[in-house]
Length: 299
Image 1 (cartoon, rainbow, N blue to C red):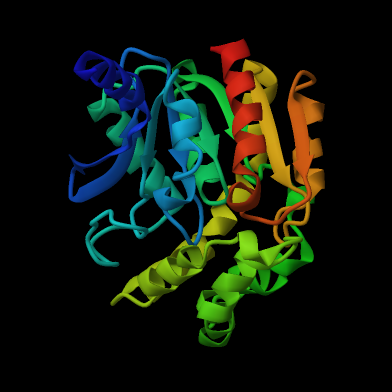
Image 2 (cartoon, rainbow, N blue to C red; image 1 turned 180 degrees about the vertical axis):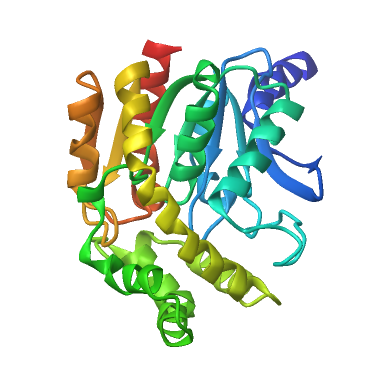
């Protein structure tokens, strides 16, 4: 009886997520890790306004066969980074921190799963070291102009004229009601959205100094759009295996952004789900099965 219990525990062990920190220069990166380090690695990069918590349901769906790592980006979650002014809160700097993080964890080759802000961080990792990227999964992580909805208009105005008035207008995206709306918009059954998601995000947003960090990152998001042609050239030239799993009711990143990959990656797999921006909150089982099958075919 005891031997059977031990065997069951050993079988379940890879599914358990470990919660760790890695010192990366001045940044103490929090991350979730599951699976055997001997298995192919998958790096999960979250977006705004959340953290690696968004992957809590996906990790166990992959960890019996893959080494899964989900860090909190600087400025998010439990990662501890210097205050604004001592650390450059730009997407280029976030990518440099994540690049060094992967090196310290000895991830020589890995697949990336990207979402929202995690996408431009992932695209920078891929273009800097294409030989390290084994496959790409994008869940509402954009790389094409046609993927940007009209919801970006106040932010585009902030990019063009970063005045105090436009910066104040963008603050509306940080309010608790707006954060909740990002989770619930386009969702058929809002009772599927765990309330701790947007409550945790709002609490983090309210931490001292974080609002300015987020406003700086939104301003710098213009650098990602400017680099879309560079990212698209990477897709064409390197032809990485790519799966797009998209909440088709996303108010920020339109389905056209997912369909656009077919121009540069004819073999890209594109799947849509009847849900919103945070598709994993309502469709983790379906999306997880699609990701697993994709990774099984390509890694």
